[in-house]
Image 1 (cartoon, rainbow, N blue to C red):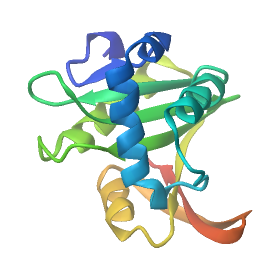
Image 2 (cartoon, helix red, strand yellow):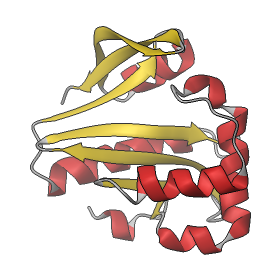
Image 3 (tube, rainbow, N blue to C red):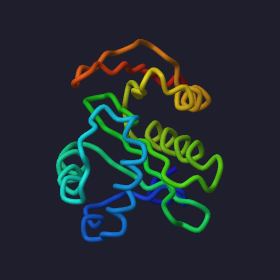
Image 4 (cartoon, helix red, strand yellow):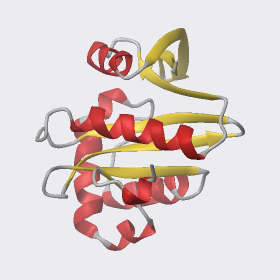
Length: 165
């Protein structure tokens, strides 16, 4: 399976920076879900565009729109690569339509990575008190491995989960 032929995932390219509506849409989603991110700065349109340049297009990473039934974005999820590791990151649901679509998209993303990229391990990090997300990831094959403390101001506790296939 190819991500390019997926009807539920669409790669976010630098063209997003020329589409103010899409930038503002993702920015609103990020603000609404900011409690789930380690970095919690005040978000402006300018700072969000800089974040895209540095943290999406400036590293070995791919970010995808998760598309609803009518092809409109309802969320996003990303992949970050380090040597022979792949991290699922920047998963965010913005629109509550299409129940089950985020899980479907995650399954497609996992399958495509393992079918096409020689990696040894896939993992993710989730805030350890985000019970909804932990349950979601377990349902899709991720197993809790260890807790991680990130110190940015007050400490944040994460749970590292690895995909087991």
